[in-house]
Length: 59
View 1: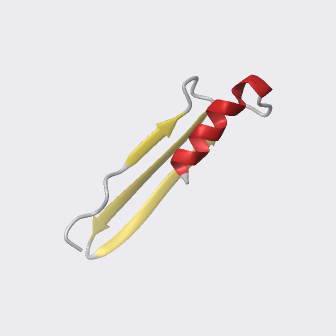
View 2: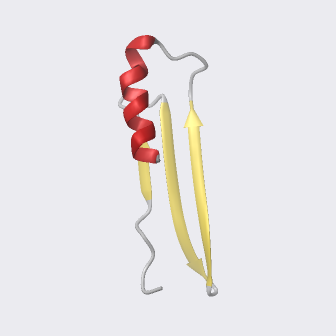
């Protein structure tokens, strides 16, 4: 592999959800690290559109 894909960080506009992934090439091994954070237990109906767009980007 010539190069690894770029790392990404995505979050909802109000920072309720965030996702980050990083690819590392160390000692001829590739590792994939990811972090998902959800900062609330309940999501209001008004926030659903933001949440839907967030998961479209993550997937």
